[in-house]
Length: 55
Ligand SMILES: [Zn+2]
Image (cartoon, rainbow, N blue to C red):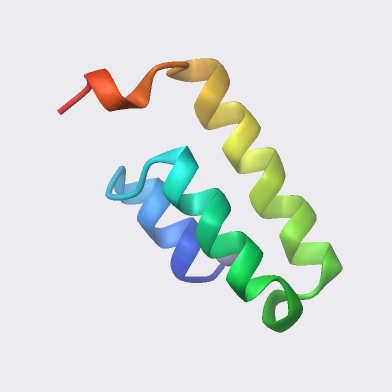
């Protein structure tokens, strides 16, 4: 669990923002957690493919 996971869980960050943050935090998080976050992002995108239209 990291800031990105928390923000995604809260719906406070779009997947686009989360991917940008993930790029910046990649080295700190480590490969294993980066893979976990990418999975969460894919799930979030599948559930809501157009997040900019949701409030
Ligand atoms: Zn995380």
